[in-house]
Length: 371
Image 1 (spheres, one colour):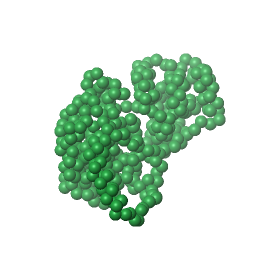
Image 2: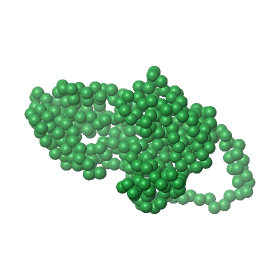
Image 3: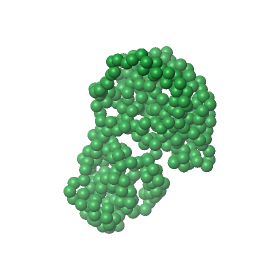
Image 4: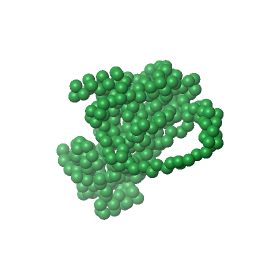
């Protein structure tokens, strides 16, 4: 591993394209996706002249427009794409920040623009971040506000300076979900001039700031995340319970129901955006641990409602709870237990807690952290 890292560092220093050996050890390659290539084989001279004229006359407005245009959101793509990466970290500014922990799909050798997500090599492996400046740009960050060649960049909710009035508001602070610590990270104001072979990207290794990467480091543009389907579903009896509880919110319906079935119904309610259900099913046992989770859930609810669509909830739950259907329940004591399962995606082991209430009903005592 040390030899590999030394080799990677050397190639980063030399700013040369990565060798096949380094690329092969950093990236998983899948069969390429078929594309239909529509080509026009003939074009008149007058049309060429017209296109050139339009390009020259509209170059400046388009460049300025790019600083405030909407960025195409990441797609959820089945695993037949050309390349899948598992970045060490991903700084996805914008409304799709919650996809940062998923395997990502890239396209190589495509143009990059402001706000795009770029995958690149680092000495620790593959990383992903948000493009804030192109080759030749003068980029300045001041308290989170990004200016490019003296024009304010307004992609992914950027544009305003972040201060004490909005720094703790996840709906106003586009950097909120990229804090390394629990408190708001400081901004490291910086000005950079991107060379011909460089991009300016967002960075937060020790505070919100900007940095440059070279063309030699760039792997490609992130165009989507890998699609996952839930490995578990509700059986007939669980579906009847789900529908009945959705209507009544009566916890007594779960008397003598297995903890694993209750956990599945709890997770399914969140996937379906039935937050009233999941909240009512959460443990009623009061102790420091459950109190902390309950407070977190309440605080995170407005974030769920603002950013999490049903499609995203299904995708993330399918990834996090893959293999749940084969989970096992272990009773720790008279009132505590845990469900453990092995992920069918990466083989990791996951456990979460269940608590028994005064009526002998097991209730979920866990929550998937959003940030």
